Image (cartoon, rainbow over the protein chains, first blue to last red):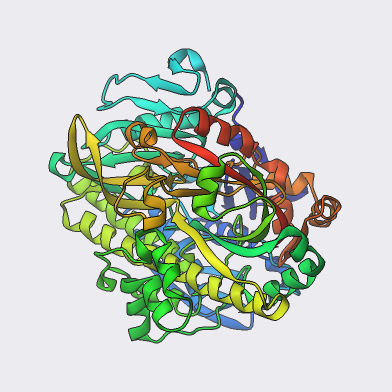
Length: 155
Length: 476
């Protein structure tokens, strides 16, 4: 049987942009990819990919701000921590998040923030809730000049 | 899955004998066709589970098994703490105690049909669902603790249900050993406003009817009859469970290194059951188990209030409530001895046979009702647990149909509006918070639930009792 889970879907002409997000197939859930010229940029793009599964991130206005601080034992685990910390904060503050910023990554510690507004199911075009970012197919890599980060999120 | 690497035990059972680091064999219950369609990853993940310390008898996979996180979804494994047995987040899942609850009505299909649209619209309005939904109850600090330690029992005591609801809930709606001190502050904050919410994804609230009776004697014992209208609720522990999973994945990753447990896949991280980390995860997970029971109980109360408005004469009484993402302490016969073991059921439903004292009295003679949800638009089944299933699979069966198409492929293939229209032509009325969510959950994105149920029935892990067909569905 062919593993469709490994087939990457490239979304339109986003391929040529240095900073972008993308998805890959997974049978039960969804794989997210963040690409950037720096590691923080790749983390930010992956966050966009994840929140865009829940609603259209482009429709979210940056009216309120939340702070995120996390640490882990490796870059890979830090990436998952960042995503899960954002999910938790969005949930606690009942916000839809649309803009993400990683201010600093020092060793395996991260300082970041995100902006958004109160979720409006109609205006934000709600989709499916993401339960958590997982260690499945987790990667934090540098390929040439690009940083690529990815993992499967449980929906 | 390539079958040449497996031994065929019979038409519905396949075996991978222990090799290398495997401590026990892998047993997969499925027909040849389901085996051929099954993901190769199931074999790989079930084999990894078979290598874990203290595993008993076999690493088991159900006919609906698919690629999961460490454990396959549809995976069952028992561990003995006396033999270095472990506990794993991957063996429970992020949505702790996600499960199904079926309520019987005293109405027939014909009595509900004229009011169906009004009923579904009313329930859609009353039962919060979808991304970011909040419940009608906002819990204070002390109240949260009660929900986590007392589960459905606490919410019934506070007016959200009747005592009989508790009697017909697995574990009477409350598991012991749940200490909120082991649940993070973040998890507690996330939970405050979510009790009594359905969630999204594959969770649903359905109005169904009994379309076919296979075993009239057991159906009678369960109080089910042909054309009877029933209501099924499928949901779990919401953000609290997700946060417990997230928090302890990190804790158990550390524990795996600390105790030198060889981990073949990152999501399979685990801790010895008798370690501090393992104990804390079990306790936090039990809090989430109780929360899920409470959640389904509050939704039951909301469903009753919806019926009260539209069909005020209707009585809604519990058939049963059973989870399918759990780790539980149970007694099972292993190598001729009755042993207390920790059973992980990841996407697998407990299915006790007759004579289990944990079952409500009316079911002790026949066995536990086992509720297997289909997908929106396809049938669901009520089965009954068997003695044979106790021996073969630690009293466990499948939990649903299992996906056969990824969410993204489904989204590209179908539009929500089209699915709603097609189902409406079949007489199924859908109300959803997200049309994109509907496309992801399209019935054809799932395996054929009937083939999965036939495999369970023929392997005698449980026996078919009735088939349910949906007429109304509410999605997040």
